[in-house]
Amino acid sequence: MKGDLIPDRDYISRYCSAMQCTEEGQVTGAAFQIRPSDKYLSVNWLEFLCLGNRQEEIREVRRILSSKLTLGAKAKIAVLNVGNILNYVRSQSPDSRNLSVFHEPEENDPSHSGIYGLQSEDHLIADLIAEIVQETYPAR
Amino acid sequence: MNHSLLPQDVTSKDYLIPHVPAGASNVEYEMHEVWENKLSNLIRREQSEKISLDLIRLYLPWKQIFEADSSTCRPHFEIKRETYPIEEVSEDKKVLNITSYIRDQSNICFAHRLANRLEFLVEASKEEHPDEVAILLDSLRNFVRFLQSASNLNYPDVVLSPSKNIRAQWRTGPNRHFAAEFLTTGDANFVIFSPDPKHPEKTIRLSGLVSVDSLIDTVEPHGVLAWSSR
Image (cartoon, rainbow over all chains, first blue to last red; front, side):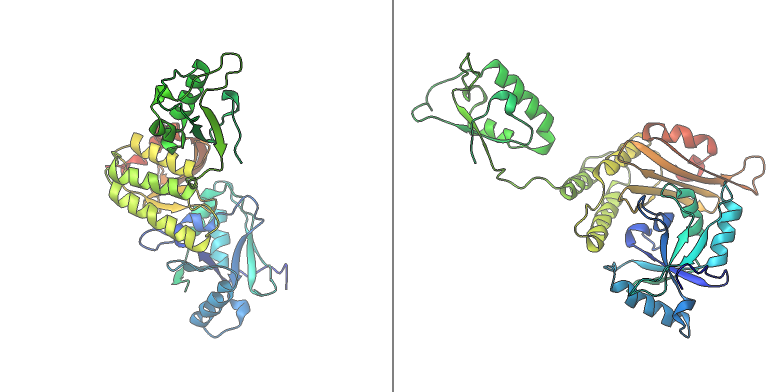
């Protein structure tokens, strides 16, 4: 439901363009920066999809994203644990930043969610988040 | 639509075509001082863009183009403004021109690899956002200027920010991380994760905004050159 806080134990995925990955395919902090006009960083809540395993969740995320975006041939889908994001950023950022992850469902993207508490100039925090990416998958 | 122009009306966007009156082609003319200054400035300013004013010089010998009427400053050879007949150089084309410059003419020691990487980023950017500029030109210019001035830096990971600025990253570990996003303004947003000199088991994490000219001087005291340069 819109505005629900996503539990720490759950996982989110983030679409990472090839423009924001290294030549070796590693996701960099640029994938977790937001534009000045954005209120939050868009992600998908994987447990909300109620599928059996990660492969099925990623397949569904690909399907959803492909209806909204042009998925790059070398783009990635990064998977992160919500609790890890919040704890790592709080403990390692110079201002002990508190982030929150809320459910932000959209009509054709019911698992859509947002990481709140980021500003467009928060490059250091974006780089911290990139450090705790747990898994990456090809975006298509 | 054509119309005659006076020197003060000419802008750098104009495509100017000298109009030669019938029977005038064998007459030598002196360019009026006002026109000469105006056109010289425009040509100098626009030289890198290969603006069509250059074509004037090809079309007729430089000193034979105009003669001014001293009362109106109107040239004897009329200058006309027409719809720009050749495609304007797009931002993306300018970016690719810079990558060619990097590969063929720059003193950057990893020039070829960098040019290939930039071309990949242009392709990736256009693949996902075909209607947007691939890379912000001034960001790329500032990045190249930085690399040319800091010539002993290692090859960085080069990516694009969501705003299409160049972001370069020199990272060899969680506590050896230096990243800089090159803004179009001539400034750079930087991030450093480096070992605490007094407590090497701890990590210093800091970020800031400085001019590209001051970037190395700002980050160097934090030891970043130990892992980002040769």
